Length: 500
Ligand SMILES: [Fe+2]
Image 1 (tube, rainbow, N blue to C red):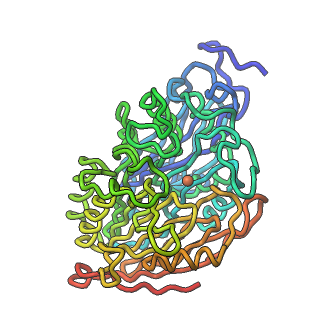
Image 2 (tube, rainbow, N blue to C red; image 1 turned 180 degrees about the horizontal axis):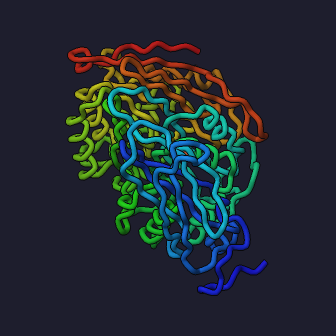
């Protein structure tokens, strides 16, 4: 079929333009962002989703009921061709702490409906999911579907939403279940096309439609293990490629307009859930120094201990530290990409660490842990590792008497690395080597957390396979972290209770 001609003469789209679904994000007490991107042919090779080169009007509606009998806000946005026909509607003036339903209409076609929420006042409990790492080739997005079925109030996504590799550029143990769009992502068109492929997945669409998301990118939204302005391959022109990847990321995510600041994509930000909790989302990729000792999992790298090295960059570090010090919420949840806990990969004497994680930026980690020790009820939420982890964070991981200042919950991957497995010997050795880590699970999954004034209860959800559809999700492990107050909170974190 031939795409409609550009220009005012063409006023109808040839098929459903809402093939990429709908989404919402960055909730506040009085509003949120609504997102959609029009594409009549998501896999159209030029990354424009088969859309004409003209701008297209998109009407939107927000209602307090699922049947849209009580529409409380409505308007028209312009899906601009130069923004890949994406729409970001930032709403204000809504009531705190309630569900809203939204939908779009364009050229006679109606979008699917989404449900979203404003943040509450006070200490209203929060159910939230944590997810990361969704390599499309490695398996079906059943974990997204199961997450959606649990209807969380909020989804926190911590990076590797999409992968830049060409077909089979990164193979999983269980093989390839489906195939990436051609080539490694290099141009704006490549990134747009790849995002469209991912967004076409109905399970991913269901997870977006159920709740607002808080998203932050890691490396693969641009390229494996990049660092600040530096490509891990040393290829020239990386800053321009990064800017293209950022633009495509913004176009495809429910982010506020303020996040795209020229060549910078600003995702470090705070979102408060009443006085119960504040999310401090970090960017551990864009402002970091290059990995020490040429990156990788290595032993004997002194450069990683250099006190001048930074992961967050000085500006973000000041923003984080002052924000933690000033926080007045009961809980403080750090959402970030890479493992904070020390992780020795070498069984027996000696130590090998992942120089792409906080182990490669050890001095700044010590500063972070000092800051968390002064923060009310801090919990770190992490992605990247493709395995669930539960860890105690301590100023000195090698000292059994070092106080626990926070807990780190690492969400396994939605799909990356394919079908899960449990290698009990490997896990036992890893736990023995790292006594501050109490749980590891190599299966796919996500975290489902319930946060109240008194405790954070977290289910480590796992699926037995993703190479076929239909796996159930189960709670493989549960941890309950009690809140501390006053002097106890300033001293050390209380012992959690675990089951499973
Ligand atoms: Fe990943």
